[in-house]
Length: 350
Image (tube, rainbow, N blue to C red):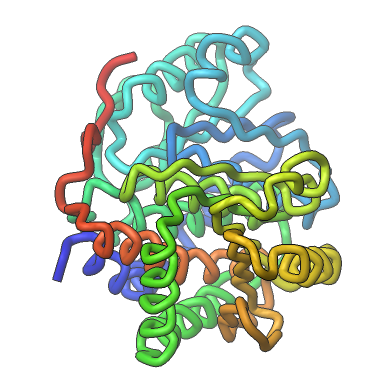
């Protein structure tokens, strides 16, 4: 089994391990309930995990200013407005990403509190107030999958505690693990994903557009990145309904449009868009796919049975079939996922 596929198969196991740390994460968050602003920073997939966690502020009706930024953007621009009433949370798989460490260092110089979330003990211990290492084990692949899910979930729990949101994260995470394991053990669904990709490859499709809304918007960005990293495809990620504002002109071109649609206040609008695009693309080179937990049925719909009681965790479950699509897309194109071109495990300079 390839390292990427093995990591994907361990997503549920990694979340089970994370669930044993929920009390520790919540206790850490409770220390920072009096900060005026929270900045979440990261690079690549870790930035998208930060965005995902920041979306949880909607549950607190935006009672605290919360920002999610690329580490480099924070470092060169936002760090100038940081002061002692702020908290900066960094997300990094390795804990060694150059611009992320420099962002935390700059924040500390300006008096802010600093926290690092990682799956390994990295650098910067002199300017990081609290270093939270997630005990999920190492990630074998250069491409982030199980660590993205675990870091996203941990950052969301941390934000929930900071914002004092009344959610039973342990119960919701248990339900999330059940959702993901059920999907990975569904050989019929996994086979369908492989067959879907086979049709894309046979049709010479190499452009992919991912649409998401709310907490699934950063997952759309993460999905686009995974297809870039694994099969060097041309990709785009947009807020779901933004597709009508210009990109809809591309319907008919040789591409796949994937809508990530978790059940929430916007899901009906996303569902209408799916059916509209499906109708408009008939007989063309455009394929339309919706990954959802809405129990919708029909052509072009990948339904993931998942009700965790928490919208953000429902959305997080939907990244797993997309990881499988990315993996199969690379393999069926003859690309070695063990050695993705140009990637390194840690970016140590900028």
